[in-house]
Image (cartoon, rainbow, N blue to C red; front, side, top):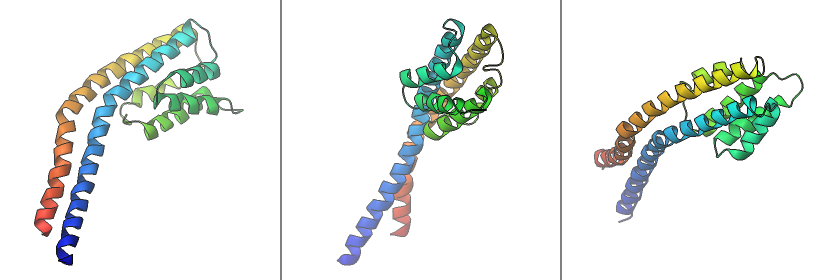
Length: 175
């Protein structure tokens, strides 16, 4: 009797664990387009702050950190804090912010490839040039968002089912 109960409990744990893994992977597919949209909005706001408000970068980053939803707010908060340290360049602060974004969001390293290059321009060129670079990055993110939405449609449901079904397969094989 005890053996049967242990088998049922172990089987339930296996199915729950694989289901949770599958749903976790599916959540990343679901969240990636939303995070890319948030990033686009934030970069458009940064372009506005730089071009029309002539706001210095530390203040612009802090302003965006308070006005953007998570996880984009963490990126700008980390960049603002880093930029306030003596001797830190805008490019270094930008990299710190992007690393934080990678940790806290569903965006991938490939999504941020063009955005990383943006750090070299921030604070070093005139306002119009910075605005132009920001808007080019936004266009790139729009293309990535379309691709991410396509991947979401293809993979989100598959990973949910795969999590549940792999757990059931393991239980069947082991029992």
